[in-house]
Length: 332
Image (cartoon, rainbow, N blue to C red; front, side):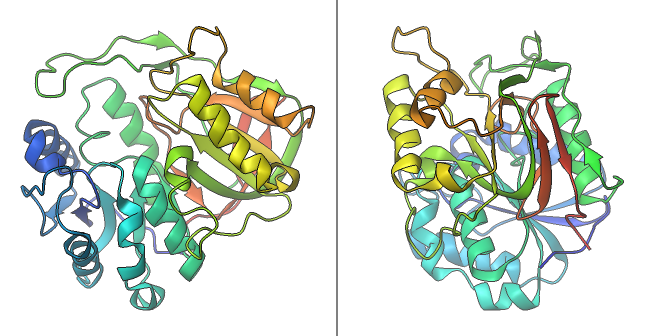
C-alpha cells in the first residue's frame, strides 16, 4: 500500500512521539518549521507542541493520541516526526492502524521513529519513509539542510524517474554544535561510500535504527525479515561494544542468513573504544565470513545530509559500484 504523491502546498503534521524538542530546544524546532514553510508547505503542530513531561513530550497515551489526531485530519497528508528519542515503542499498541489502512499518508522520520515506521509497515503494509525530521534535519543550517531537503522533495513530490539512483552527496558532517547556540553551518567533509563486500542484489528495503529495533524486535510490530531483503541499518552515539551486541542480536535471530544485502549508514560520533575499528569492520566480524553485498557509510542516518528511503519498496544494491537504486515508485 502506498500514499499519494504530494506537492509543496501540502500540510505537514508534526508529532513528538518521544523527546519534547519543541519545549527543550524551541529555536531548533521553529527554524525547521520556518524552513519548510519557506518552501511552501503548511506546518501543523501536534497537540504536544511546547509541552514536556520530564524526558518525554507526554504520557504514553497522550503521545499516541497526538499521532492519531494528526492522522484523522484529512488536510494533513504528511505526518513527520519532530525528532526521535527513546520511547516511541511505547505508543505502538495505541496507533489506529485500521484507520490508516483506509486513509494512507506519508509517514516520515528516523532514529527512534523507526519503531513507528516499521510497526505501521508490519500492521498495514503501507510504505513508510526513513528520512528527515522537522527539528533535527530541517532545523539544520545550509548547506546541509538544502541537500537534505532536495532529496526529500524529489521523493515525496514524485520528482524522480524509476529506476532512480540515489546521488552520493559530495559533502557530509557529524560536527557537534549546541543546538541552542548554533549560528553557522557545520564543517564540510569530503564524502565517500565504502564497498565492504562486493556484489549486486535486488530486494525489499527494510530496517532503520539498530538501537530502536531492540525495543520491539520479535514482537508483532517488527516486520518479518524475508529471504532476499536489503537491510538498512544505522545508529548514533554508540560505542564498539554496544554495536557488536546489536549486530550479534541480528545474527542470533537468523537475520543475516536471510538478507540479500546490507546498507550501513554513517555512525554519528562513533566511539571505537580504542580499537581503531569502524562499525562496518565490527559487522564483518559478526558476519563471520558471510559475503553478503555490503555498502557502508551511506547517508541515511543521523549525520547530515540525509537521503529519504522508502521502507517496503524494492531497491537494487550494487555494493561493488557503490550504487543504491530505487526500483519502484514509492508513492501513487
